[in-house]
Length: 267
Ligand SMILES: C[S@@+](CC[C@H](N)C(=O)[O-])C[C@H]1O[C@@H](n2cnc3c(N)ncnc32)[C@H](O)[C@@H]1O
Image (cartoon, rainbow, N blue to C red):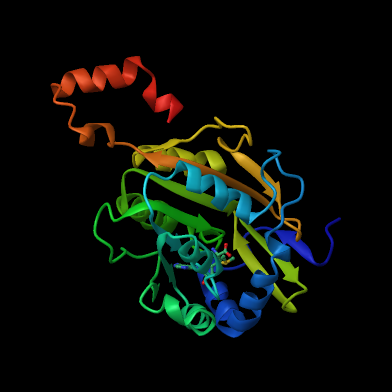
């Protein structure tokens, strides 16, 4: 029997619920996020996967440039503030104006770097703007048809060739409903299947980045957060960068050498 505080199933339209939650709780969400308690992972699939910071640390090794986007940066825009402090040319968007306002209230120097923008719509950035995009715990609030038709293709479009997408989401089928004690409210989260997300990203020109360093981050990674949600996170790199190197070779040669040397696999 399920606990009364937890159920899984199609119980609500995800898009009706989340905006109200974030509008009401922007300040409290930012405070809790800053404490970092919900950003620590338990039961992780990889030894190096301990908290949100482990992922950002690894992303810094993978990116070939400094311009990044935190897509769905959340109330307080904590990761944007930290990456800017570390020297990255980072920007953040979120669909909830109150979340963006909280970010600017906390960190006034982020004004001009944070915007209200909906990831279920076409983004206003030109093609190939960013070296990396972070999208952590956001698609759980967007209906799957929108995620597949718009959100994922847009995140890929705004990346440069060779750019890296870090995406994190709750794993499973349907919608998970939980009672969140931090806010005294029931919350709904859309779950996703990792192979479906990866297949869609592959079609849009992204390749999974496998593990190739001591900390072992890479491939499909899993963790459970302190609230008991099972999450998947992975990095993908946008194809097309080899063609931009201007090696002065006929196109056919580049493509066959690309395949023969298995560069796709190691990157
Ligand atoms: C769980 S929070 C995660 C925040 C941040 N990425 C982090 O990891 O701390 C989810 C965020 O996604 C935002 N969000 C939900 N739907 C969105 C959409 N359609 N477009 C942009 N942001 C969205 C919410 O407003 C909220 O700030």
